[in-house]
Length: 295
Image 1 (cartoon, rainbow, N blue to C red):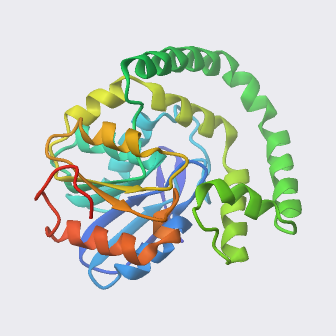
Image 2 (image 1 turned 180 degrees about the vertical axis):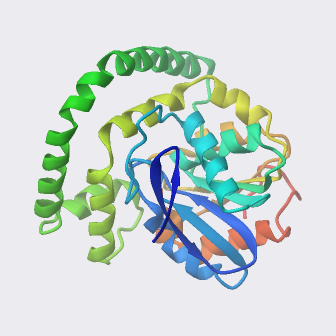
């Protein structure tokens, strides 16, 4: 892992390969380790950068706001620090929301955009209820933030105990099961995912998750001009197919590629199919023959 400091916060990141820059943003409760297979697969054709977002993996939380909008600006600062004038961008799930804001706010920086297992709530009623919940949660977090900061040392102790106890039990498999169609047999990898999930900073995770309800996210999708590919998984229990399709319809000329027999983490569960689709899009073979098509 390498490290640089942004806004007085150390950001740990992985870097491999050489070629056109590819920035990889992990999802909620995860870390850059989720991109291990992707970085290995693309090492001969891309310089891959995979940061641990603040409050996840090895990166400590930000002292200030940690909404997806703020994280998008932070990732542009990350790209600036590495002299990445333009890059391909791939965001997974929660990381996809960050990628959306990056592509919308800094269109000149994003060459091609990939949104993996990312979607929005489709109906007007769902959007309304989500926006109401967002404003209520935002107010609650603002009021409770000082108390959350006081509770943080005790939460850190609890997290360490959970990690120590959990990896020696079937808990990692149980936690991972909803995220996969077929659970991987690699216990060490599942334990690493469990450690990432249990060890994430709770204040950061709450603020980030609640910010997904911001109505501005939908507006950001509508303003994206970069060639965009959604990669969805047919058996994803976290992001249903209708939510992927709903988000894709908001971006002109966006395309969807589906992976069958796969859950929420295709770069781990079905890496060969996932990387074939990703490579085809990045070199221009999949875009834009037919919007909303299936690969």
